[in-house]
Image (cartoon, rainbow, N blue to C red):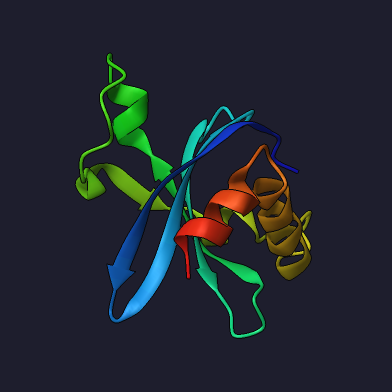
Length: 115
């Protein structure tokens, strides 16, 4: 399982009429140390991890300036992280989502920002 070293709420995005929370992650994965995780709030008040992308722009950055729309430098790694013979796919995805939500104040940030 991926270990999260740091997680920070970044912003709320509105895509196709749906609101998503973007959370920046630093992990122990050599192949993808910087990730962006996207959550949406379900009707039952729970959060669903929708997508995980590699944040190559941060890896290339030499400064602490805020991330500015470098989607050209991103790669959707959701299926890569949660597929294969040694992964339980859905179970791993759910567990990873809970790991993110339980890190620091991420859940409370999403509660206040993603209504």
